Length: 165
Image (cartoon, rainbow, N blue to C red; front, side, top):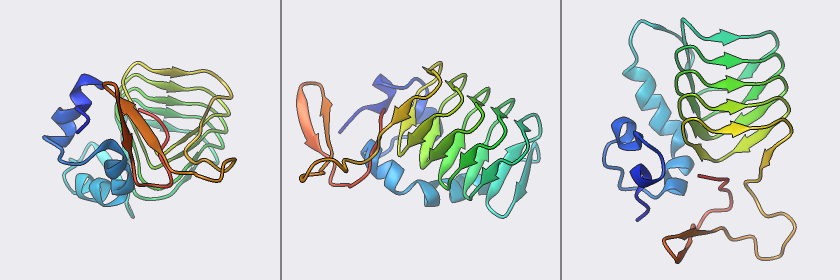
């Protein structure tokens, strides 16, 4: 079992003692976020599975597909595409034209313009420069199984999509 607190500070503060591997969390992120949305307070505007903190800024032409939680003082630049299953903790910046799907992004991280983040768990204080791509699928090889290396052990994820931790 991958110990997420050893990789991302404060992970268990939000998710408790998870009994799921990281890719299992991502595979179940829609139902996890739907439950989390029910626990949010009135500092969020909540509508049809989309929760936006009242201090967040969402610029023009941003597409949000539920479930999505946008935390305090987050900024999402124009024309971003936020697909279902995304939680941005506080002070996350997403640049113009980014696409993010099925991902957790912890506080104070920045995803610069024209990036793709998919099926990933991004810790706090992480910076993705412009044009970065976090691949979440192996299209270019016959065997497209996903394996994760952790503490010298190779673990098969038994999933077709998983990006990064």
